[in-house]
Image (tube, rainbow, N blue to C red; front, side, top):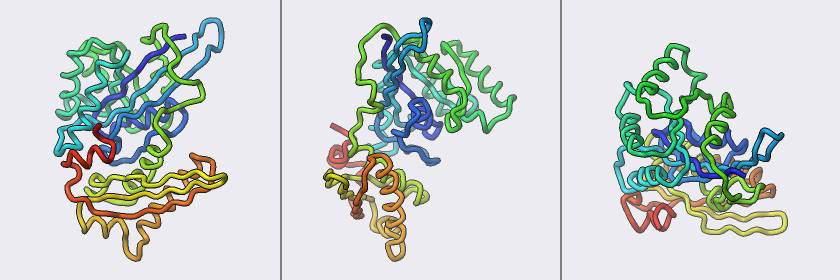
Length: 299
């Protein structure tokens, strides 16, 4: 068997989590149109058994990382450190872009770091469904001229277009090794973590502007009964005014968030779910080492 680890890196909102979900054929990472949706490195486990004599058994652990950006608080610092920390710990790196290198400093910042890394690198130009052939060609040639990528591929992760090519390219850098996880596991993240992420995803989708980025979700109770899972979650925000926005008039916003989250959690767990949610204020928690540790962002 061939096995190994693959890091997925890039700017915020380029489609890293969407690509991971497409590779696995299952949603394990939350996705929204808002940047910095992913805060933790999330591991997705891809296992494939040989279809024929010319094929090989393979297991790849894909690590979806937070978007690399200029931090504005300690949470941002943690997110960027978590992403950069994967560079030297994987067997291959997938660098995702969705725009020309000349359009802004964000991708150039990552390119400059990747130049110092000897790990094989695959450039994936995502969202090709939104660009014409001339735009794709410009992006392709700008990166090709750097002569630092082992492969350059185009994909539309949201549509699953050419995702198989990305899997094949990553597999080409794997070597003989052990099966790290059982073949029926697609993520090592515990159910409590995934549940908290689902709730946070719904907050991102229901709210606008800066409020969602100042929100954290803590699971206070997670009890599994025969046909029911009881979950109590606290939504923390940074300002009293944000609390009112999350709850909404007559509690309608919070009810909508809870209903949408509960339906997805039930589909994930395959059982009925009783979900309770509260909203509390913890001012400036994104700059608090203690809060970041309590919420699982720092050890």
